[in-house]
Image (cartoon, rainbow, N blue to C red; front, side, top):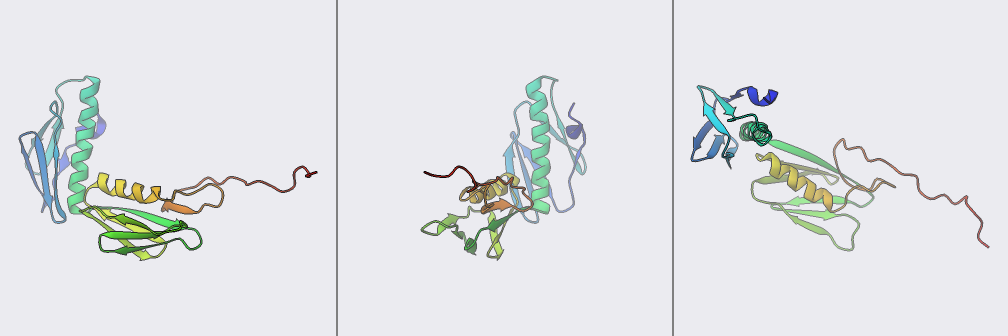
Length: 183
């Protein structure tokens, strides 16, 4: 049995959980999330905890057991604290500016790139070279951050581009001019 999935999921005060019809709904101070429960997995509620159970020890059941446990835990954390991903932009003239539900990126192309921020996600730019993506759905926050990063991933020669804060970009040595002489 999964070590994580054995542990009951604590339900903090201010969070309500409803389980009905193969779906779980979690409401908290930051919002509401809902997801389907895999058909072989059973979620039981005690006083202030949820227990995720599986019917057998088949490989598929074990995988779904741990997955369902982690997704429900992320839902509870999301509606209480939320999730954030921070990105940083490196490069001369590269910058970002959040304008409501749009993110305007200047990344060295001939035109600025406009990214439409999906509903439920908040994008902030405290500095022109810093982007903070936040929301209650962990998967959606990570997806939006990955889509923004994909407009100009960091390149290995000069390190220019959009990267996650703390991401290490392996640098390559460029060509050198001290090679063979041209005739």
